[in-house]
Length: 239
Length: 191
Image 1 (spheres, each protein chain N blue to C red):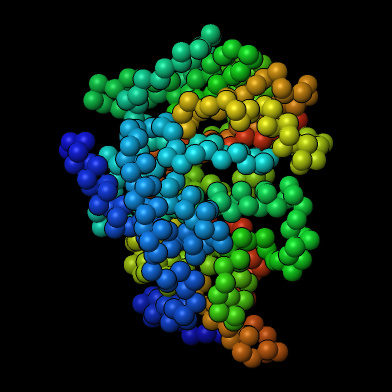
Image 2: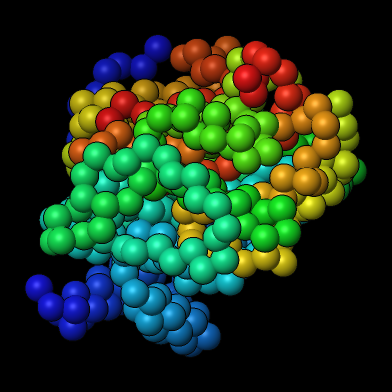
């Protein structure tokens, strides 16, 4: 058993033990410095605010679970969202705050049925998941919706929620099906949205849609993220 | 604050901290492209939230916290890729714990000891030793923990690391401290 040490002694000991093992001590080369300049310019060329596109290109990943949203500011709604091709708007819960500065008050989430059987889901605040689940069902998307407050995505989040079962399919088949449900060739208009092709969801299956963000009022790394997965559409899971 | 001032301030912070965030990512990922993605995602998020950024003195741990999320995204993406392609078992039969961070090359004994620790312990050790986050408050911000919890985690991680190194130096004596199997649990949610 080791004797107890003070915090400062523990810190010193850790630094001593690991100092020679640092795998990233080399100076940045010219190519990396140039890349950083390009990246900075690409980022600042974007307008600030929630729901903006990522600076880097979206890379399609052959993943069963896709996380498509970058961090999105919670509770400040100053952006008017244009839905030029929207045919039917199914508004969700109204956001609790308007963000001040004369900002536009947006719904906490919205479900928009678009052309070609597409359904766009936008989440701005983690409010009324049951309402979103019900609205998605009305739009032809059986779903289990979970909103959780986490500073980080919990490491065990890959587990499906209680009451939900994974489809009896291989990972490869699920990835193929997910690519049809979330077509990669359709541009998602903002980082806090996902577009689903409801007609591609086979009978008996549904979507698991999870969104998480830090607790309201916490300052560090305020972000809202989403992930989706497939589940068996059962009364216990998708209602 | 005008848009021009905001952009100038952001650019200043980017120039000051982007190399640190890149190294942070390189220490946790074995792909140059993935590390660059982390930098891009971290500062894109910071730019979006620039009006709500924390005080200057805690900007770096704030950026580490955002970068931590991006790194974990990269890990998950890599794990999914391996699972889908089925290559993992063929190419890395001795892999343990499934932590992509193990791909980073370190000194042999330290590497083995770190690999045997839970990810939560590894992360706090990296932050202290390599990112120089030696203040409990800053560590807490980077980890999403209260300062007291961050302090406890440092002490625990150090104790476990010492125990593993001692065991490696004196095989057969048995572990000096109980070290649970590496687990994916333990990322801070105690904010």
